[in-house]
Image 1: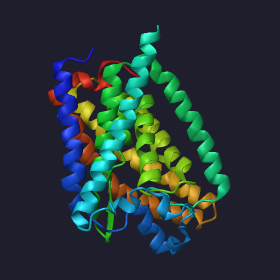
Image 2: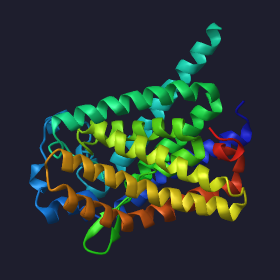
Image 3: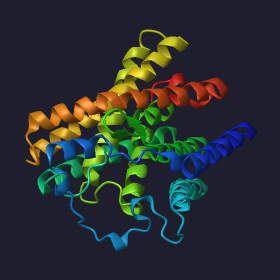
Image 4: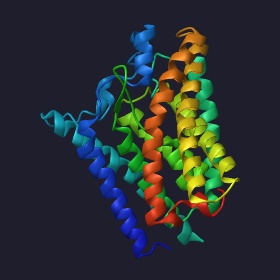
Length: 103
Length: 213
């Protein structure tokens, strides 16, 4: 099943994701992306609506609100995202294992 | 190219959501055939990695930025069914936690990036792979598939904007596809680098190299 080499790969993968999301992400370009730019140029950018109130989102716009420092806001947002996604697949794994035991 | 709420109308949002839900249901059903602990772990890693890489907006000429979508990366490492699920998870987390991409528009975003982007790029990759299994051809197929995944996704995003009457279809198509032909180059660079790296250290983890999934 999962051997030692796999564990190494998993560990390296998680560290890489965390490093990118926490420390490389702060260098990301803040220019509008392709869709936003097209919307600006063509003049429909203000059609964007906030249908769901912003207060509902845990980390709106990748700003981790619990800290003041802008760099840490991005870093911690990135870290949270990586951990949330790993948690989703962690739950899938637990369900898979629980289902396997029943057989 | 995460579509925010307000850019597409309700009929477009609902119909893309229905197609996406159907597509993901098929993906989940099909993925079961090779679902094991190792595949789940690999899906988690690739998903987390794509989320992280999506945060890295790179500047392209004209005061614009782009970032990885990851559809081709996920499809080539994991196969299209597991790949579609992985991208959908990233998009769902982005929409519900980070306010990145609309909640009503989520179905459209999943359709463009997780369904069209993933299955479209896998088809290209698979077709080129028929020519030869050599490393050079493999990397070329990765490059072509990743570039096209971005361009096709932008084409469908523009189509949805046009159908919604947000802006004239022709002009939107031209603007969106035009800018994403350049952003797609960034997608190629990152996807080829990541896949070449995995291919070097653990070629067995590129699941589609062994058999088609």
